[in-house]
Image (cartoon, rainbow, N blue to C red; front, side, top):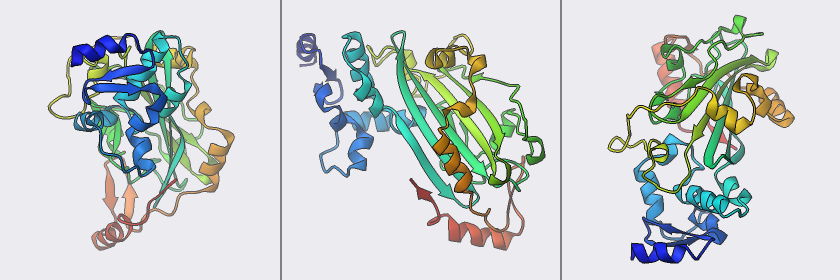
Length: 314
């Protein structure tokens, strides 16, 4: 059956063979095969085998929530056929999404582009905290900061333990990131962490990452498989690529000229500054050591009362 489907696919430029569903998927109905689109629309359709495969391998953890192996392969086939890829790439991207919680405001964007025959991804998270907070890090990070399957910061303060320079609030004005890009040794990922003062409105941390997922011809390709985050499938094979090359290819300019805050629209900046962070939970202090409760009883009460119900996602 698999061989027969591949034979059919050669004459169907707008279809791909799904090895998990063992059937052809049409690019014309790409949204029907995009898990996040279907869950957000509360579709009642049965779950597809390719959705289960992505979830089992924790592929979104190795990329981001909007990514789909099926749409990836559709986009790359359309590109090789010189067909329009805008709609497919938009499914792998997202506009500004915001998360509000005690002591922070977070904005996230993601974009997908095809450059030189490879699918490149970029995700940026911006987290604003009150300017009065000594360390410009959020006390809370849903799931931590996941750069790739091999680099994960369970809490934001663990950035410091990885050697990333974190300025204090008194140092953030005019702060310059001297580390630049950091890259993973085991997959095609590079990232940077930057900080910016917005005066009384707050201080922001920017985490920007770029990923190269390859051509999408073969799901066994290491550029793709190195995104799997499940314990059984995570690859620790060493890779080699020129530092800054993924960022430069995505942005189409030298990585040294990339401005971390250039991705924010004027409206994004206004939202960050006007939707100021709610006060930090009582009894909580953020330091480079970690999250320190000032008083055990107050801290325990705050965690019980705020964690279940005080986060707003837009």
